[in-house]
Length: 245
Image (tube, rainbow, N blue to C red; front, side, top):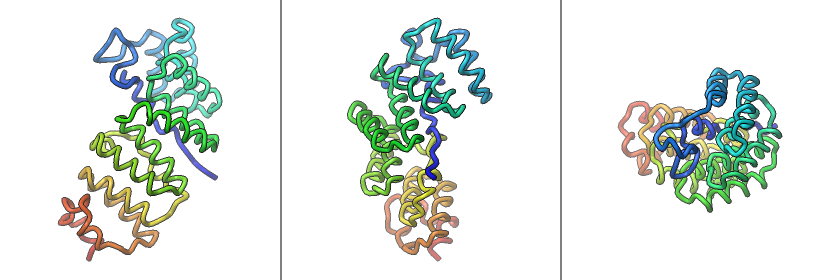
């Protein structure tokens, strides 16, 4: 059975960065401004009290029915509460209100993945990719989907493009669900390629984690640690050397 979690892109919305190039609330260019109910909903969401969060965001929507941020946050709470079909409707509503609300493309894609509607999910993410060609998060979302579907060449190409656009993305975002992506694709090369992505950021802990996973499923070409550019800066680290020796 396929497993997928909402790659928590919409948590970016809690920090106010809900649209590409500007925040969701025009009156606060540097930080989010929440209504009382929206603020209470965010608090409940962070406590993982999803039922209460949904109720607060419902009140926030009643106060301001044209707020894409409120719909996006309620969609997150609904998804986390297991109500995927309702969450999907909220994310669709966000994009109806604001076609530039980039995180809701990602969230809608995650709902479709959860429903095993991979073709529709890919379509949503490709539309986002066309609309936001410089959004690293979209590259990672679409790249991971393609890797999950065993379309590794294009998938890892998008992941590398995401790294080019935002080199610190992997170290900053807690949403990079490689374990889930690779759960059914136990291919040594895939684990090694994810290790390579983390190596390029200098994240030794995650690099070693994925090298260990590659080793566990039979990766043999350890000489590549000495020749591939992403590993060169770490090649003398004892944690890396143990895979070569």
